[in-house]
Length: 454
Ligand code: SF4
Ligand code: SF4
Image: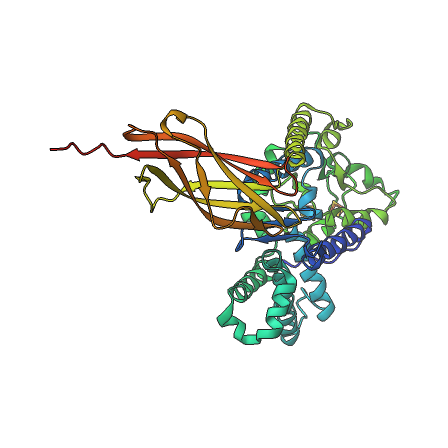
């Protein structure tokens, strides 16, 4: 386990503020409500996804796809412009690992030092396990609901283990969090994170990275040289103090060039600023582009790859906005009941359907279901009728109601054999007659041949 030396410079302080803001966001969101329902909840058990202002259903999976695409493209664009700033400033792995370090330094000021006593290590482990349980509770609450979990815990106590599943996830993920943030730590970024592997293809010489200025720094000094010493001319500005290495959480030496293990946390920038300040010089490690560090040319934000990523991102966001703006708050799904074959009895053809009607609005409504044949009118001797227990169907806000629908049609004379006809179901809102949704299916007339008289 690498525990880097603590450094607190301007960038460290700024990152600390960003970290606090992100932690507040991560931890507060599960407790918020909106119109009496969770602000954000990924309710997998009931197949509903709550976001502020709307509840999304599994059949609207394409919204999730578009969100994932836009997040991916944002990452492409952001990385080509600002390098791995996400890793160092906002990734939960970094934010939580640094929270673990902060807690460890509070409960054990000798944390990470050889002088740390065994009992202090036990205190740190205990604090980390409790912190893991706390963070895991909030992580699971995005899927179960923080208030639900708390009230179930208060009412059932340990008995909850026999009544619900989420406590098992809580225990298991607490162990995982402890292992990841307390033991594995930044090895996750170095060895497991897929983004770390493919980010190098998104970077170019104009991307903002943290790098060492070898023009000024090299050759590195091998001994202490005071200002004005003639030996100053033989060496670069790097004093070889190794502070930039000691504070690096992934244990790399940024002076060896850009590396996959660098998470852009900027600790080395603060360390070198501190060292160079004592020589009244600018830092040798900082944010800039390779173009600047190697050619002394300003980097460009507008480049072919940033234009392509930006255009693709704008297109995906626009499609998402258009779909959301035209989103129908009703849904209808129709499948034939495979347990009941279509039949004709007393000249009435009958088909049975399993229909799901969904009211995706914030108010309850009555929804009327109608059916009409789209072809084969000559095969029926009158209008078809959709029979269901209740029509219009009363549906609560954000409710999905499964209903069984029997469709009957009088068969015209002399019709024999099997005929598959297109049928259209229409679900209309009673409160807003302009609001309706349609689905097509098949209606089968399976009329037996007349038995020949002997
Ligand atoms: S090299 Fe610097 S920015 Fe990169 S991980 Fe190490 S300390 Fe952070
Ligand atoms: S902190 Fe700066 S001066 Fe010290 S070794 Fe690193 S680059 Fe050189």
